Image 1: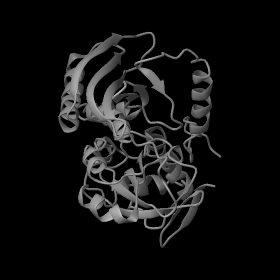
Image 2: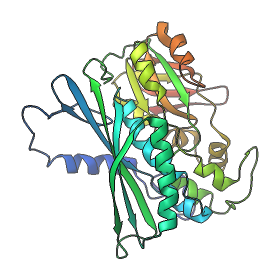
Image 3: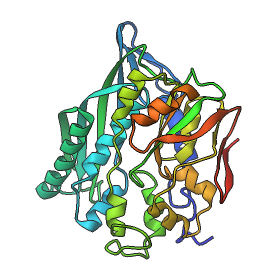
Length: 336
């Protein structure tokens, strides 16, 4: 296969399995654990680091925007990537039933560009307003020997009572899977997308797209703030933020299986990427494919949950094992 035309996320330079191995190697050295108030709560597959504060729990997340910053630079528009940075952090907190309360950012630049920083700040402020979060600090670094362009990341703190925490341990066969639409590609899989679509102009429209390709790639990640109300008012068994690794994120919740017999319709950007020769299975292992968040709940709660989130609908049910996706055109097994 021509390495200049990658057809998988790994061939584009991002190997999810190797990342998981690297994380395990890194975590193997984290032996010291605080005792007493603030001691860690260890949950397999957790979207956030958890601290036991007695009557409540603190959760901490950290994430960045990834190579989406390269699209922003090529388009000369940095106003929305701050929303992505906020979203990637708060959505991971929502995925455990945690309410985000405070955020700090880290902006590393090859050389300081105040105009770019100003636009990034606009996005961070907008994301903070949507998520009802305070930006309490941050750090800017000039790293000309390390950085080419810039990198944007952040960390967020959330809180919850122990009763509000969602870990997935209540998930059982027959539970409903409710999918909430994404706004587009979000901030994952951009390395593969950029390389496959390099022959197209970012400033032109293609197919059924209502925006230019560059504008489509820059649509900011949806912030799923409504999940807090859903968790408060409904019986919820599991929550998943669908990021890099696509539907493989569901495996973080339970050893049971996921049958998606009526998946959400992927946006045009995904169809354009797939048309470059990416197999359906790989698409669902790399991108959110139109579903940025999933809620697992008893069938009896599905109607009420759908009414609390714009565009949400039941996409499948919990099964004995594996992750399967099917519609009128295909049937694929993402995991056994």
